Image (cartoon, rainbow, N blue to C red):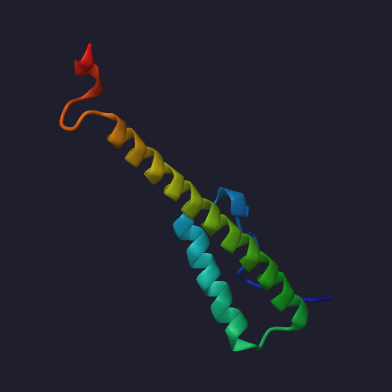
Length: 88
């Protein structure tokens, strides 16, 4: 039976991680995989977690990009220098 790697043992659910936490864990996993000293089963488990972490980071980045685009659109809709409430 393959041993459980320290990075995935007791690790929180990927969907609950902040961008910073997911990125930090991903960096650790890449470093472990680059060493090449883990058994194949452990390497595969780390690879799978790394893929999930990369998707989570991309979700955060996509969400941030959407929020920025919405903020820019809202700013362009308002008259320059005047709050929207003053139009009444």
